[in-house]
Length: 316
Image (cartoon, rainbow, N blue to C red; front, top):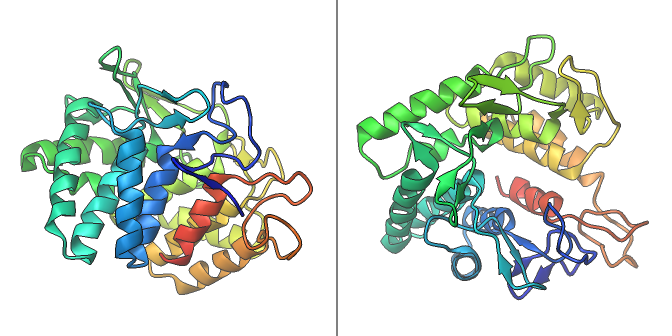
């Protein structure tokens, strides 16, 4: 499947005008670059990692962060970063330093980690994005952006790091919805001090649970719920705050993330069952241009997030 161009991985296989509010078509996301970097380091591919990192840096690096999005058609680099993707790039660099015993990567991780802290953190709290043009952040944090595992590694003073970690882990933990529906709120607004969620997107809640699991803060109620739904093959894309499914969309990425959660907490059965569920979405029709990947044969559409989450889950 041809999801890659000279600047990186396409957001969707089918091209668009690349002018919408959200990235589409052959636009390139730092999300994709960071996931590819992480998959390369987890599978121990030094050369591939070096290529992915060089391309990511060339495509997305700005003064205050990594741009979240690049449009090749309009040669437009959006002047805004996304905390979750910057942190994933920083994590991949730290892991590369360890895995490949290359202190150059560790030094870059430290440098970009410090930059991230200086732009996306204010008074010990992390914000979703920093706008390079306006030199300011937004006013809230999306809970699934709170990557505690990477924050623990940031090369800032121990006191600053502990303050940030403590603040952000409280925001993430307190976003827990209920024992009846053990998922998480979508965002926390710093100005009003309140959480808000229109509906609960499963991918986002699962990423929040994964972030908690990486620092041993996961709730057993969340894990039990995930295991039941994976067993039944009934984890849907979106729920009401009370836990009522709002659609019957099941996606590759959902089961890829539950596999990662299984790997993280050492639950081999959850990992294997999730991979099995995930592989139900794999295209097995050899005549399809999507063969071997994840996508929709009827429309010919494929999404970078699904495919990259799957390739990361395999090497978790």
